[in-house]
Length: 230
Image 1 (cartoon, rainbow, N blue to C red):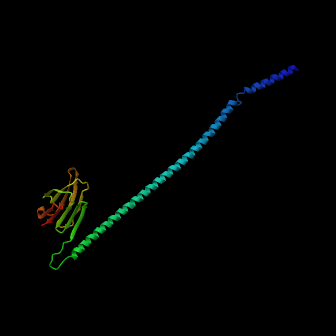
Image 2 (image 1 turned 90 degrees about the vertical axis):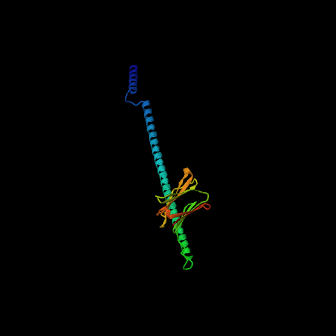
Image 3 (image 1 turned 45 degrees about the vertical axis):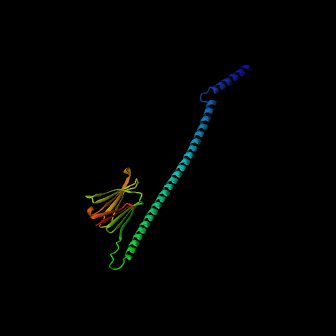
């Protein structure tokens, strides 16, 4: 009987030892590592899904910002067009007003003609407000330059070959050169330009005939120059 019991115990121990030493049986460490990998994969998957959601939200935010910028640009363009249209309208009104004033002056001059034998009153041909401090008037064969009194006449000259009359006034002023044609048989055009480095500005009158055919009268007190075709 003891021999049988000892044999059974030996067989049981052998089976138990064989089960623990089976290399294909999963170990506890393996199972733990497997569970950790599953959890890590799930965590990575959740992170990727959250990153995708964040990226989509950022794209939507960027698109919203781009749409706002585009809308602002369109609004700025619309505003610029409205400002330009307003400027054009104001310029048109100003030109219409000047034309109306000129027509009224001509009408008054015609109506002021006296008796039959009195010479006709000349019509104003041109009236230029060149700069806030320079005005030029043309009446038939006479051109008048009126300059603000604070700018004194420094020099006058004649360029005979070029048929030009020059007048220099003291004053350090900044402005773009102004050139205008004159509708007159006695005068072609004029130009007003600045020489800031030398503290003066110049008025040049261009005439179609030799300068000897013109006379000048200078009123220094009132800063008025009158040029007349002889």
